[in-house]
Length: 203
Length: 313
Image 1 (tube, rainbow over the protein chains, first blue to last red):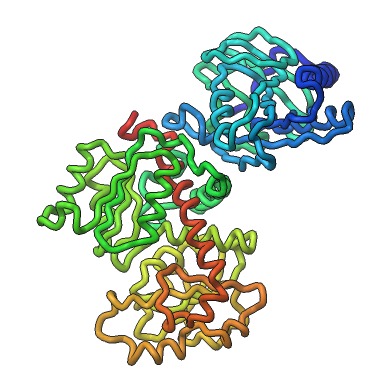
Image 2 (image 1 turned 180 degrees about the vertical axis):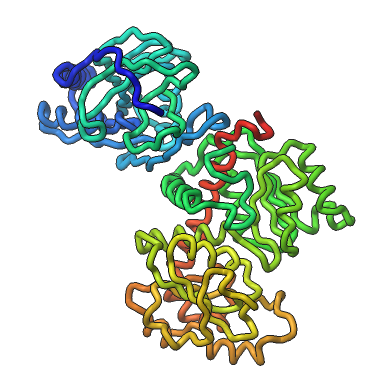
C-alpha cells in the first residue's frame, strides 16, 4: 500500500488528549468509580488507547484498573474471504466474570470488529456489562452497535480512511482522513510494520 | 489462496521460510486459546475437515481432530477399517468421492509415500500430509520447530542431533530439511545400516556415534525405531542398539545443562529412551504434544482462512 494522501487532520494531539481525559471521567462517572471495571483494548491501537485511559484513571482515582488486549482475528466474520496478515496474542490477565468490561477501539465504523470483540470477551466468562469507548465514531454502521463513550464524531465518506496515528508506532499523534484508492479496502490501520501490499484489516 | 504460499502441505519444502515462520508465529495465540476454560473459536465455522487415516495413529489423528474442533470446523474421521478402501476402493476414487461432498481440507496418513500428492491431484480441497510411508511428516516437524523455538527463542545456529532410524523416518524426512532451512546445524546419528544413501540431500551431516560429540548439542532428538518398517534386519539386536544409540541417565548427564531431549512418540521404552530418562524428559515430551494442537490450528487457519478460490467460496 502506497503512503496515502492526507485530506484533513480532524484531531491533533491536544484534541486527542482532551478527548481521552473527558472519556476517562465519563467512564468513572458512569461506573461510579473504578472499583469493578477492566479495560480491553482491541489490537492494534485500541490496546494503546486502553493503557492511556488506565493511566488517567489511576491519576484521577488512585486505582490501577486491569488492562487487557484483544486480537479479534479469529472471531472475524470474513475469515473465509481474507485473513489478517499478522495475528497478535490476546492477553486478558483478569477474570471477566461479574466485571464491567470497557472495550476500547480507535475508530468505530461498521461495528463488525466490536461484534467480534464481544464474542471474544464472552469466551472468557460472563461479564456484568460490556461498554464501548472509541476515539472516533465515523458512522456507516452495519450492525446495531453504539458506543458509550465517543471522543469525536467524524462524518466520513465510505471512500475515505479515518486513521488514528500514535506517536509510539507512527511517529505522530493525530486522527486524519485519508483518500482511499479506488476499490481499496476501507478499514482500520495496519501496524507500521505491516509490509506493503499486505491485506489490511477491516474495521 | 490463504496466507501461505502453498495450497497443500505435503512436503515440508512446499513451505518457504516465511511460511514456516508465519505458522510458528500464528501458533502462539492458539496456545493461549488452548489454556482457556472455553477452548473454542468460531473461526472455521461451517468448513469441513476430513481425517483420512489409513494407518494407525493416536496422537496425530487426535491432535488434528482437536485442532479442527477447537476452530469450530466440522470433522469427519475415516480409518482404514471403516473406509471403503477395505472394499478395494482406489485412492483416486476415494478422493473424488470426498471431493463430491465438498470437503475443504483433507488430512491424510497413508503407508505409501506420495499418496497425499495423488489426493491433491484429484481433489479441489486442501491437503495436509499426516505422514506418508517413509517420506514426510511435515506437521510433526512444525511442532518440533515450535517447541525448540519456544525453548531457545531461535532456531538459527542451534546444533541439533537426530538419532535413530534416519533411513526409514518420515519425521526426519521433514524435520531435517526444515531445520536446515531455518539455519540450524543438523547431525544425523545412526548405525550405517540405518542411514540413507545420500543423507546430505536431507540437509544434515552424518555421524555413527552418539557419544562422540554429545556435549556439543543443543537438542538431541531421538527417533522411534519403527519395528514395522525395518527390513532386512539392519540391527543385530534392539539391545545392542539401545546400548549404542539409546538415551540413558548417564548420557543425559553429559548433555549441556540447557540442552533438551525430544522424541516424536510413541516411545519404545528401553530402546530409544530408558524409562528413567522418560521421567526426566516427560515435561518436554508432553509439551511437544501440547504444541502440536496449536501448530495444527495455526496451519488450518492459515490454509482455510482467506481461501477465496476454495470450495466454500
